[in-house]
Amino acid sequence: MPLLDYVNQTYRVNPNLAKIENPNESDQQEIRIVSTYLWNHPEIIDQYLTVAELSPEHRKIVAEWKHFVKDSFILERHLQKGSVFMPLSNGKLYIVNGIDSSFEEMFAGMPLPILLETTLIPFKDKIICSDIVINRNVTIGRGYIEAFKEIYMTAKKEKAICTSL
Picture 1 (spheres, rainbow, N blue to C red):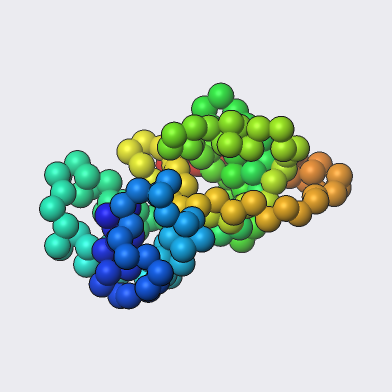
Picture 2: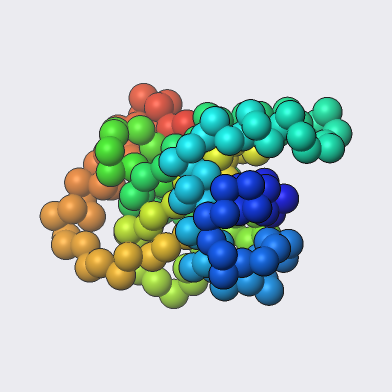
């Protein structure tokens, strides 16, 4: 939140947001405008690090966010260690964890696969979503479901599923 607030205050991205402090108290769509601006201008992270008062640990975490993946993803399945995200732009697969709750809990009752838009960022030794996850409410046909399953099984067999960025 402090990084997004810095972006909004410095670049005046969204005048509808006076201060970004608590995501639960702000309109998620309004915050997403600022988040989109940040991921379209990742050099802002370095600028923020020059002015932010952060502990060495937090400084390292934020610096690593420059290694993000912004895309549309297929949430293919849930595993004990996270959920499998498949970006539409390349053939990689990622194990992604929620911050407060798992994606299995967030999308409980929804049939998989699900088309999502988000940004993946590193957080310590895991991958998380940096911003609001947008569910695109698209029905995915059986042929695609089988293709996604086959991509997952091949990646699993080849040990090619990314658990960090």
